Image (cartoon, rainbow over all chains, first blue to last red; front, side, top):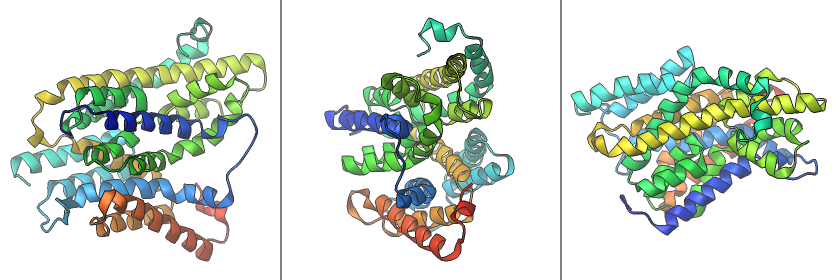
Length: 112
Length: 245
């Protein structure tokens, strides 16, 4: 769909906006007090991290549907540097900047 | 909500603005990269603007972009967005007593505009919900001042990113900044050993199941990780409260 606007994508975007409202307001949409069933309460502890990891890990270690076969891949070093920064200093912005500072020279300079 | 003069005139509105202002740079930088990432991944300018102004959720936008571009089914994209946003479900439980005195539409507007940083600064400034009318208004003004800054910084810089994206060559790989932002958020959420394990299992499963159609590897990864961690928690954690923060 590169560069083309289509109705399907716009409909999905509107759906995602509804998801934002639903999740951010989940427990105060209705007036009556209510809670989560026990299983859902437990799932809340593991689902968010699982969702993010399932989305980003393939973006980092796969190329065109295959696991990278060489360690000369700038994405792996960028992500590791970013994560290392996070656990050292905290902060999402720093993670991004440090990761890019490692990724860009390797990617642009060495062509990894 | 920040258009209402009654809110804007409260001193706590300015306090909220002042508290959030130093963080605007970080939010803006992330918004800029998200804007660039959207256009660089192949979304049209109209779609990118619609996503910025409607969805207003950085991590779920970044997670949805590759799925949207790959033409994954709508329910997979929406389910992924929902799962990435699950932390807000927990926040909403926390915010409920602060907002329930308002009419529903007002609660929904505040809820929609309250993202991670606004939630964090607001609940830090006010550890307990309001007990009388004046406090209700003061807290509402502080919350509004905070998200006025985050919303403005995010929208402004995302739009700049969308506008400048075409000046930046694809080969630079700047879209990777979006993935790195998600890495940061992932690290911030991996606060217990079982959560770290959940992330490792989900990531490994999503890679192993990559050949599945319709990006089902993502849903598979989430399902396997949640079930395994559930089971492990039942086996090895005597007090479930210990597994929380």
